[in-house]
Image 1 (cartoon, rainbow, N blue to C red):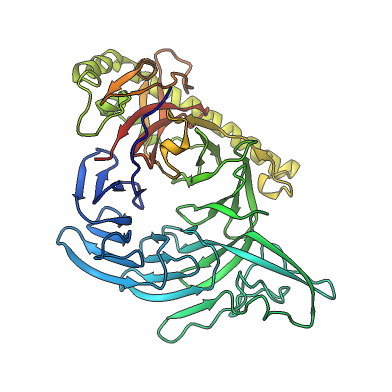
Image 2 (image 1 turned 120 degrees about the vertical axis):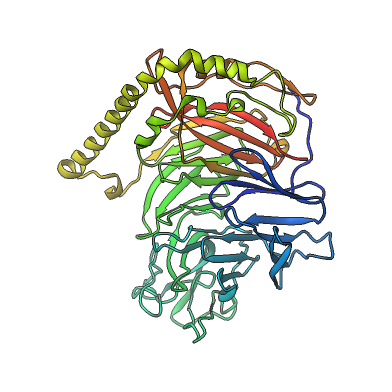
Length: 526
């Protein structure tokens, strides 16, 4: 069927903990929306911005101009208190700002060929990484917890083979004051070739590309050069030193992601067929996943907060979910009351959040479901214990292999390429309609639905929904993690924002995987 092409938002993103949605309107102004209640927390109807980001759920807003308004430039970053309307600080840069990342104590600003690292408490410039090439905003940071304050970014490598046959090592680690390993004579002109010692005032810089191609031709190198675009640098924002270079792909990097705790990174190349996950401590590859056979543009990659799952969105209509570690059921979820589920969570909508369809999600309908299924809560403990025993069996098998067969997944030299554990489908097939970017938020707290609630949800979303003169069809298929007809099922909500202003919520079965249920679809643009 045909879809009406909507105007796209200029920028969409979740804040650091996923509690708020930051949405730059397709005209002027922006909105801050609570991702749980969908309440409009703050909005402005004037100003043109290319990027806004809320610092957690505070009143501090990081803003970058679009260039259509003389008040704020695309080379200017402003931090403002939206509650008091006080401007905290502003910075000007020599080039257009392509991305901004922030964690609990660091602010990172990416240009096309430079990265600036600030102390968020004092807004003092700590570090500048210079002379990079074609960053395209491909940076990510850890959340600065558990003594892990890391930055990742792609780099272009130029390998030079010595006359004696010594070559640059693979996944090189940096150690000591020079941060260069003993077996590396010269890293590369687009990677870390040397680092300057920090000044007394803790301001320092790294000249990544200290010499042009025609200037670096030492006598002990022959004329043979191999250019490679798929390397990643892991940078410590506490010690202000690069830690390692990871050879991630043979082709240019298209999408990067770092886990919240900084223990892993995920990368995809411009081919979009393979997703790789690396350990940031050792630089070794931990997992390799196949998204598909045909090429696709990877739009976003996101780790779940407990590092159990990796979610990938692309120009394809399929959202791929890969399992990293077996999901551990939180025991507190057993006490989750079924009636705590929001009424609108049982329906699919394609409408403005201020204009819900009155025929769907009525209190009497939701209450009838709840009252009819209260007796099934007694089965929740039995079902969750059954799932827990399945996880324990899987862990016991893994331990047996490690001890007696010595085939631990981490110790294998050849990582097995795995397929997805679960998947979702966008109701809108074409990427040009959805937009060329998307944002992912995996809700940490699971929800519990009865089987009858799930069946009714399938029935609702399988029907044609008419709202605001727009029509959406969805699939009614999906897995359940309970074989008991009267049992309850546990799901992890996954929220996905697309550039056309839609917020999708899918329900993932974390035990069995399979196709996810589309719980809701909301249109957020004004």
